[in-house]
Amino acid sequence: MKVGLEELKQSRNKFGDVMIPMVDKSNNGDVLMASRIAVRQYIKSTFSHLLHDISDALTNVHIKPKEEVDEHPLVVFLEAGKSSVLQGSMNVLLDFRQLLKENLGGLQLSDLIVDWVQEGFQDFFRALHDQFLLLSGKNKSAIQDENSTKGMQVEKVVPGLVLVLAQLSIFIEQTAISRITEARSHSTIEIAAYFSGGGGGALENGPAFVPGEICRTFHSAGEILLQHYINMRTQKITVLLRKRFTAPNWVKHKEPREVHMFVDLFLQELEAIGTEAKQILPHGVLRKHRRSESNGSSASSRSNSLRDDKMSRSNTHRARSQLLEKHLAKLFKQKVEIFTKTEYTQESVVTAVVKLCLKSLQEYVRLQTFNRSGFQQIQLDVQFLRASLKEIVEDEAAVDFLLDEVIVGASERCLDPIPLEPPILDKLIQAKLAKEKEQTPISP
Image 1: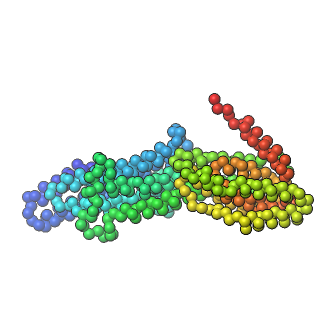
Image 2: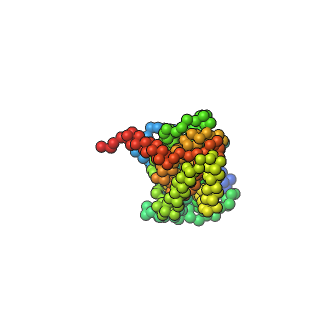
Image 3: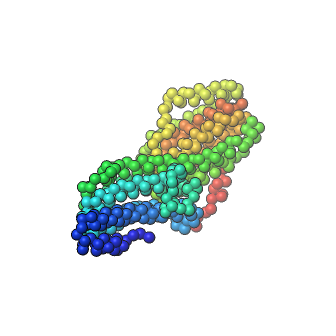
């Protein structure tokens, strides 16, 4: 349990009772030293419990990911985390202000208390940063604090929690630190004034509290955690892709009759990512504008033109040569920046996962050898993905480029790279769309 002010006062009164009747300087020094130890321990204990409270606010999403009774569970955990950090920090400031007012029986500890509180905040935010990395699985080798992580299986990290931690890090950087140091609200407007400057005590580790350093730390943590979330989601889909391309004998593949099931599973995983992102991330402001500049339609037309050109080739070597010539011409004509910085938006996160997965798909394709039917199956699956992914990504040009790369990679590994004729390709895709429409429940 948290050590309260009353317990501290009782400890302080004991020291006062000893100190007042005794004039001897040696006893006075003992009382002062004991009081300093008690006060500093109280401040450290308060910050330790604040760290524990924040961990508790994030524990449920870690331990019970499937017991989601709320429609938007990640929002609940994010808001709980924000409240624990901001309101919890304000509460400890109020507590420490009361400690200053008490004056502890005439002991002159005000300057030291100010220094200890600032030092405590600096250490607290450093520990909170480490705790975020631990909860996300990024710092598994760290020594786990028994009070904050006891009984938690860090190895089984819920991806949604990592996304919450990334957003919480940005909140700390952009909002919490300034609110704590400036205390702008009416009820706490004078609190920070007590701790805005150094108390004058000599600290061993330099400045007591450096807000800029904390902001930089959590800015970096937000980027690390966001990328960690993307990597976790990508890794799960990559396992699916690897199983798809290592299972069949592509040299003996039968002619394609429908879009393969792995496409459905791929899109389902992307839908789950989108559902999580929508809960706590905003839409991209320039989404439509960026789409209009992405040259996605021209990439699609180039793909269609490429397919039409190859249809007219009856010779396998001529078809392969034509395909590679088109691809090389496209590389010289269009420079597509594939991997750009991921923003804290729904579309940017989904697009980042899609790009990484398509790169993995490209690599898996290059490890196989295809007959004509196997190559045509890849062509069918990619064409269906092309239309589906346009609805959820913000960088159509890069996605089109990566999909073209998959087709080219498959053609390079194909013994007879003759593509499906457009009418057959369209017929198979329309059949897939009709099947999906039949399986979609009609909303009342």
